[in-house]
Image (tube, rainbow, N blue to C red; front, side, top):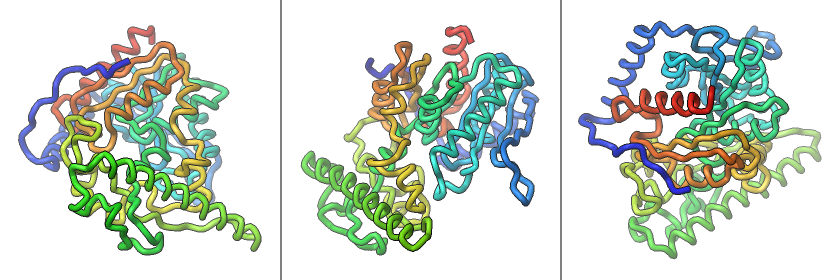
Amino acid sequence: MPLRSLGAPSAHPGSYDQTVARLGQRDQVFLHTRSVNRTFVSLGPRAGHGSFQCQGIYYGEPGARTALIATHYEIDFSEHYLAEYMAARGFGFLGWNTRYRGNGQYFALEGALDDIGKGVAWLRDNGAETVVILGNSGGASLMSAYQAQAAEKADFFISLCAHPGRPEVHTAWIDPSVTDEDDPLSVDPSLDMYNPDNGPPYAVEFIARYRAAQVARNERITAWAKEQIAAFEGEGLYDRVFNIHRVWADLRMLDLAIDPSDRDVGCYFGDPKRANYGPFGIGCVSTMRSWLSMWSLETSGCRGAPNLAKVTVPSIVIQSTGDQGVYPSDAQLIFDSLGAADKLVEMIPGDHYLLRPDGARDAVADRIADWLHDHGA
């Protein structure tokens, strides 16, 4: 099914930072004027210092007949930006964190799926007859992995501004010009997207060679991680932490002709070259076992297509047209991979977090509410 657009994006005055600040204030006004009920939820084993394994916040009236749950691999989703909006429309919303919140370098898929199951069960036990899993950003592949394997499945699936899979996005962003994994400044000029001799715009031949080199780097790290684990086990040891340097290097960040959309040049951290040589990014710190569980193309259970094929409940894929890190082809791939017979893909104006244009979050909340109501939820 071709991508369907809901309206055209409009121009917005002011800087991005000003827009973020202004909309952040508006969200606070929204929260106070709507008087959304918030309930802290904590489940699972309790640590010695006191906290429970899984924590989150439930928004809305207790016992809402239909409730959404949103979870990410490592980002705190307890105060997800759509929570108050959906609660104001009569839905429950559980912003849920697994044991790996803030600790993605130690991620293991099996533990995360167990923790998501605890959140789903809590919703069922507290009156939700219909459970909707919201896969937002990186969380979509995690939630599809849950739906693919869960004994107690959710009733609906929503993909919102989402990457198809964790290994896929990491490979699409990783810098293949790194020649020494221990040296963040090492570079092969012939594969450097920031070398002006290579573009932008980037030639078809360069794009193909670049993408192949990205896959090859992922495969090299996987082979190294396996060797290291074997060596550690030989010494009676378990794991170690390591760095993956330069992870802001998707050609689409500079060349808008590749996977065209309404996005601006750049990435979520602004200038992609500066971000690429900086300390922040997805998967830039990992243990060897977490690499194999989350990031490896060969071994990870977090790849999108295999799990999405097992998602057979009614599904909707919503993607913003100005997203600087998720692209139209990603939305189409998620849609094509879904095993649901009842599925829809729609494009909407906005950036990745729907901070702009004004009203983008309201519009998405309305669309989700309408779609759920159309399906009897």
